[in-house]
Length: 263
Image (cartoon, rainbow, N blue to C red; front, top):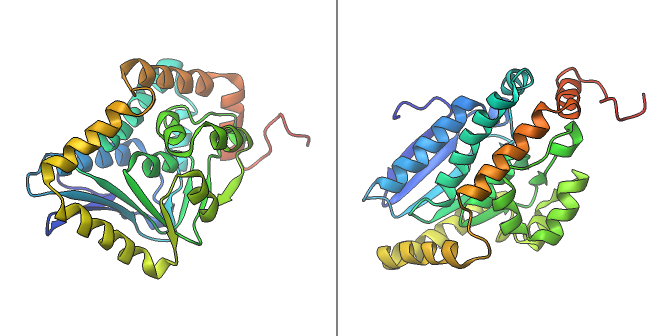
């Protein structure tokens, strides 16, 4: 896939820059966007002239999770359709996480739900101090299943217990404290931080960097393997197809309170 509609992929000086370009919908996911992100990271990872990948976004939000049209479609999916759909999201996340080139998330704005997976899957992340973060799935009767292996690895189980369960918004400073992002700076300093990391990455041995990334993936905690990924896909398919999941999504789409909240 070379003709992207939801993002751009530009390569210069050994750096591939993937930029989400749908600010009008807060760079939210759809199945088409997921396919494009997967293809872009796969292409960048395969190119011999690419030494590092930067993921960025345009507009006030980095990524707001699922877009409304996609949610409307999935609200009518059967359990099997939900499993297949979640499998494509899981493949995108794994493609980013296992990209053989080092990856940097340049987070200029808010990150919600599935967007948290994009940040967690990148090797490094810097956020603007005005960015907000939220694992909002429980608010609509769902769970952050597919992104959970990566977010929990980034934030740790203790912070994940709180923010998975409450669905509360938290600050860039808190994202830094939990380990989700490595640095927090004023928006005007984002590029300086990214450029500093790129300078170090480009100065290191390409094969050593590649091997180091593989080393961390292989050694850190539980391997994110087929069984774990399959379990997360089954988990989100179950909850999406449940009565509570359907009610929560319908309430969100129709801008009303779900039935578990008092009128």
